[in-house]
Length: 157
Image 1: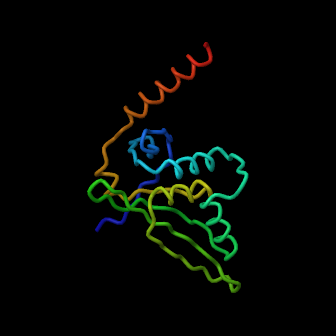
Image 2: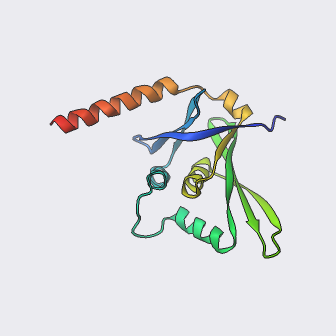
């Protein structure tokens, strides 16, 4: 089984009627994962550095990790089955003797992305998933042009 991964970034978050579309990719290709609105809002807040009145769930998770000396090392979107993406959250911790431990957890890709955005950790996709997903670069470009047009109309009106 191919264990290689491709580095990607969150390219855009676009609200939908059912939640949020997260466009992920690099210069070569972009693909989309649809997630819950609440997690999309959290990712957006982490990416923009927005202040929050109270800690969100992912903030709490980050505080717990920090309290036990752990952090998000990286996240990997590692599988795609019947249209559902799967993710792995890779944590690292170091004890008082400076012994490093790597912990790998199964997690929803949306939660993985939120934690990566919060902790500025890299995001990867497995080569197998990367080769399976459809390139949505054109769709993202059209959506971004549409949003820019709507924003310009709002400024004029």
